[in-house]
Amino acid sequence: MDLQTYNKKRDFDKTKEPKGRTKKSQGALRFVVQKHAASHLHYDFRLEIDGVLVSWAVPKGPSADPADRRLAVHVENHPMDYINFEGTIPEGEYGGGTVMVWDTGTYHAEGNEDIKKDNSLMQKQIEDGSIKIVLEGTKLKGTWHLVKMKGDDKNWLLMKNKSDALSKQKEFTSKSILSDRTMDEISESNTEWSTEAEHQKEDTENLQKKN
Ligand code: MN
Image (cartoon, rainbow, N blue to C red):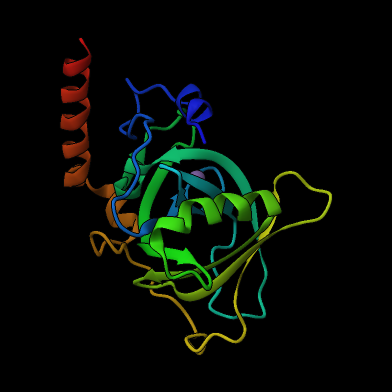
């Protein structure tokens, strides 16, 4: 699991997105879903596996209806710090547009109760092209499946498990789970979300340690 593609695609003098470095969670694995108003509006579905966020771009976003199968295009890994990234990527830069933290929380492989095993179980699920996970987010809860389409490198399908007890939920709220803001409020705001400043401080500290 590496972040080379992520770092190559971005100019960190111009974007406030975090620089790529791996970082494993101490406890349960984490996930984030970010709403991203780039040239085409989409939702980025990201799962922590082995210290990076393995990522899919979902044009229509997750559906509360288990009958819906949503196209999810596998994209480059993102750094763990991206979980807190909410703000605007400058126009003309890669992925330019507003990013909202639409949902976040922890997750585990379906049927697994030993969180130490989740990284290796998830590696196997990625290789097999069949992901079965239990999400514990604010909006997304319960069992979700991500299945790789046959004969295709990048295209997967994201769906909620039919037999899930929580699947009666009909729709999701649209505001940020981090700041309670709408997309318009995020894009109009000149103030950066505070966690970004914290990460920049950390980055500076790490650079100083290196030098
Ligand atoms: Mn995106």
